Length: 334
Ligand code: GLV
Image 1: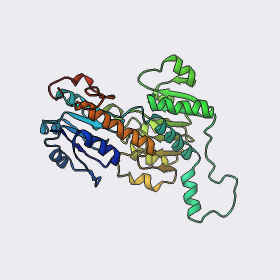
Image 2: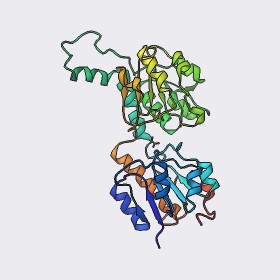
Image 3: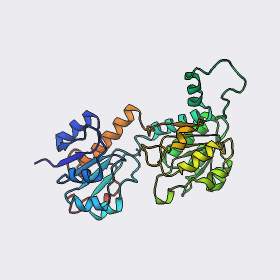
């Protein structure tokens, strides 16, 4: 008998078809975000869960789903999954890194540029029919080329953004990260490590790409925003909760910083009302990795992981991007 798996979100039909070659598949075609109790109920008897960043996989769910053997996410960020608890329960976890790096960096850069050059604010003005004449400082923003790019979190996506800034736009790159880059990469990017406070003080355009965790909750709040230049911009493509959205809305309203570009929000899909009423912010609905080829690659990578984790397909027993490969070969997966 084929193992059964739950696909907790709507994914591409080709991906579901691939999963059906190996598994009995229950899908979420309505794409509803199931409440936690319903997710647990639907996972009863399922060997695998195919998820993204919106489903919470915690110790209570694992205890209630003793048949679960693999949780495979099509997101790169996995702050919604308690990986140590999964490991303790012998449940394999995978995410979807690498395939989205360049697409997400393109978007981060685009959002930063739209923010610096006030693109959505000026478009709204035009659409409202308010444009009557050319004028010398109409929507004059700040330059990107030659400016100082501050990258907070210098992982794969941070480096891809820094590369765009340094090599494409002649930006000076400063970064802050727990660990310093390899000196050869620092040299390629002309990037220098600085402490968080200096990064905030020095940068013209801050781009946030750190993973969310208890340690990065409100990493940027009122005190940090107060260190930034009044001409600076802040772009967040990482996770809601890293920036204190209430403090950011207040800083934008007071023009304590010039503008912000936000793809992620605390408590999304809700958006802090203060952010909806200030003009100097570009808002997008968590779409940084959303080019069609990349979303397909992410979805297929999650399927590759699930198929391999549950002992099927060419990578049988070797899920390509497992986060806790130490559980392979333990009782649940054997
Ligand atoms: C998107 O936010 C992801 O983590 O893939």
